[in-house]
Length: 126
Image (tube, rainbow, N blue to C red; front, side):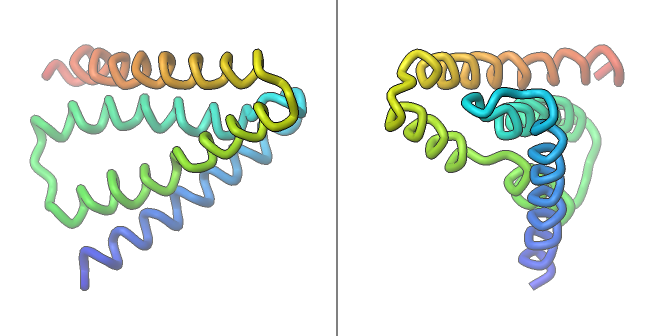
């Protein structure tokens, strides 16, 4: 039961964080590009790269690992919202924006995970 609670609490915190990023992003993005999801997903990719690399060398409990990766980062990032927003762009006929969003999100996400690994190695000398 402890692991379930850890995942639930982490997911709640991550989801609230994602929503706060959505609110903050509304002040500087166009209505057609889903900046809030994009920023949350890229931030989550960077964090998972840094944390995964760091915790490969520093022991943490399985419960804390579930809280952090499955709960917090699972709630913070969202593939389902990304997919829905992509389909919505296609539905409204904004095909170029949809393809751009899909390509940039995937390529940038992979780069952010790699950057996270790189930063963890440089910052923590691991």
